[in-house]
Every structure is written in C-alpha cells, then in structure tokens.
Length: 77
Image (cartoon, rainbow, N blue to C red; front, side, top):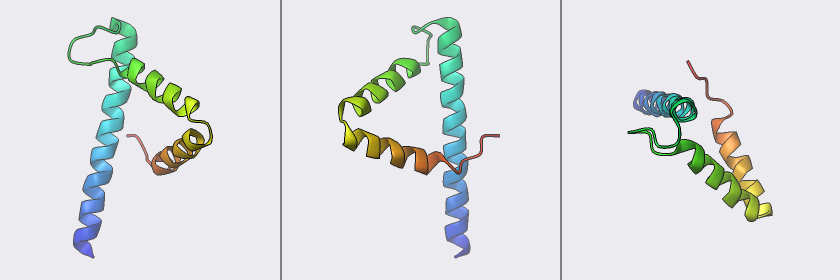
C-alpha cells in the first residue's frame, strides 16, 4: 500500500504542475496574444471545450460535473 500512496502522490504532483502550467499559459496568452510562441492557444482550447460541452446538452453537463468533481480537491501551490 505504500507504493500506491507514492504513485498517487506523484500523480497529484503532476496534476498540480499541469494546472499551474495551464494557468501560466492562459495569463501569458492574454498578455502576449494568441500567437505567443511555445504556448499554443490555451484560451481558444478552453473556449472550444466549453462550446463542445454546451452543444451536447445533458451529456455535456454530466461531463462537466465529472471534470469539476475530479479537480475539486486539488490544491494549487
């Protein structure tokens, strides 16, 4: 069980890093514009995700609920 806790800790840490990088990408994209090098288009990707979830009605609402539930216990920094 000690190994499982270690793996869960690593996954949690990687998720936290991913969320921090996403937040950094959004802020940098807003400051430098959508064509900032090495960032892609995180704001456009989030807008597309929300648009896709919204067009799917109840299924999109359920998916959004699951996504929010998965990230609800995460602490950033």
